Length: 421
Image (cartoon, rainbow, N blue to C red; front, side):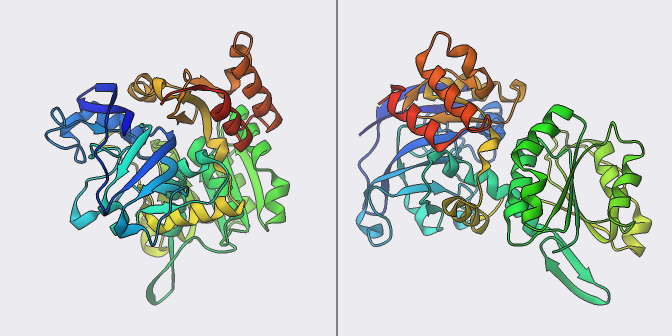
C-alpha cells in the first residue's frame, strides 16, 4: 500500500513524500492515521536530526516519519494480534515504548510509523508494550490529544504528600486541599484546569493565575466557576499583575495556611519563586514547564524545606496508565480538551508548521493527514471564509461551540475537505 508522509532525513530536512509501505508481518498491524497534534518535541527532533537521542544515526539513508500524537483507525491485523485488535477500531498510541530499554519511539525512530502520514505499519513492539490503545470516542482529534493530556494527568499523579513521622509518600494531590496553578491559562494550563475539575481526586480551592486578562477571561468562559462549584471546587481566576499584594491575597483565600499543591506552567524564575513562597506545610511544588535553558534555576527557601517539609517534583510526559485514563475520560464524555486546539491544517501544512512551531502563537496545531488545508487559526476561519466556503462553514461550527473545535467540525472537514490519498 502507498502512503504519503512527512519524513525526516536530517537536521531541518523534512520532505513530504509518497512511497510504498511493506506488507505487514503476522505480528504487525496496518492502520490509517486521521489526525495528529503537532508537538514541540518534533521541532526539537527536526532541529537536532541524528543528534537527537531518539532519531537513528542512519536517518539520512533510512528516513523516519515524524509525529507522535496521533489517532486513527485499524485496517488490517496480523495473525498474532487478531484476538486483541480488530479492523475498524479507533486507536491512539503511547509513543514512549521503552522496549527493551530502547529510546526508540513512533514519530522519531521508525520508517513506517508516525503521525504525519496517511497510512502506517504498527510494529510488534508497540503491541508488546501495551502501547496501542483502543479509543471509543466520536472525534479523532480527542485521541490525538490523549498524549498531551497524559502529561497533565501525570503531573497530578506525581505530586506527593507525607504525614509527620511516617516515611511514606502518599501519591497524588491533596484531596480537599488548596491548589494553585500559576501561569495557568495557556493550552496545557487549560488542560490542567479541565482535568482537575472533572477528576475523581479534587482540591477544595483552586486558584488559577496569569497576567493576561483576555486569556483569563477565555479560560473562565470555558471552565466556569459554576461548573467547578458543581464538582465541589471553589475556582478563582486571578490576574496577579493587577492584584495588590497578590501573594497575600492568595494566602488569605486559604485562611493563611498556604497551598498544598502549586503547579508552575511557565519556566519563569519569578513564577517559580512565587510558587515556593505560596507553599504551606507539606506543600508540593510541581515544576511542569520544561525550560529550554539548561542552566535555568530559581531560589528555594530551605528553611521551609526543613521545618515545613515543602518539596518539589517535576514531570515530563505521562505514562501509559495516564494515557488510558485520558482516553477513558474522553470516551465517557467527562473530559474534553478541545480548547487546547487553536489551529487546524492538512498534511501539506506539516513541514512549515513544524519548523516554525516556537514562533507560532496559540496552542495546539491539529493536522488532518488525509486533507489538504493550509494551517489556519480557528479565530481566522471567518476571514478565510470570505473566499472559501469550507472555511466559512467551519467558522460557523466553531462559533456555535464557544470558539472551540468540535466533533461536528471535524466530521464536516473530513467529509468536505480536499482529499489526500
